[in-house]
Image (cartoon, rainbow, N blue to C red; front, top):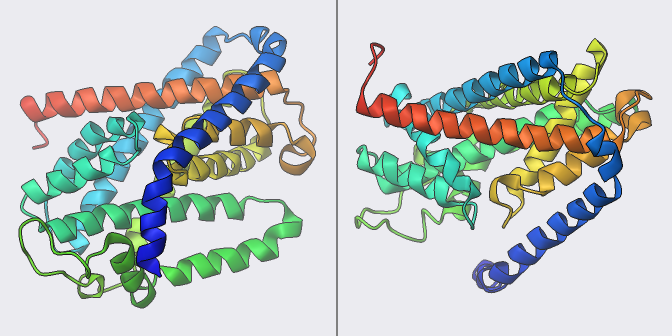
Length: 320
């Protein structure tokens, strides 16, 4: 049954993914067209540009950090490739997520780990586990900041997610997802069960990924501050909104870098004042400007990171 579902998904994914992306971008474009008058009146002051610069720096550090966490995962899997190398590789490959398919950055990371000496099965497992922990971190942060009436359901949901990360449950799940048991690697090595390598609960890497999502959220908060003043109690809610949009964009197939999905989700949630911002005034024009600037900040930080990683690889600095 699983093989039939997989074949059906591969057959239709090449058609559904572009259609989904086109539909999201069309809806976002229509929203921008309707509210263009509001967007055109949004201005960024000198202090706002300073906030955007700081947001770019925080976002860059977040990507360096999550590369470090990927190196942590490789080390836990018995492949001590080096944290600095892992951060360099992450920064160089992450920019490829904007290419069609939204998987080339993951493939490049796995191949780089293989070239570093890790078995292909373990390299693939590290990338898959990193992706799963990253998505889990975004969900956890998003759930913990939702309104009080839903707190009980949020705690139950978080408990279920954290339970799935137990090695006895996560191992078989990763085996199914990565086909480690069903396919040998290109090098002819025997399939390696994930449970052999997942010896303990991945609490450290999970906390590391939660810090990554929080840093990205803080970068988004500064982007909003560059456009309009906010109260301190709004910060956790803005991070929550960012996390929800980021996770949806992260897991949506066919959306390179979550393009369109993130913007549509976050701009919609930002204007739900009664639900998220306690009645704060936040127009659609400000919301659309915030998500557009956040995309610019994120892409610029990723491009700078890729450039710095390439230069550091060619001319190593003192910390090597």
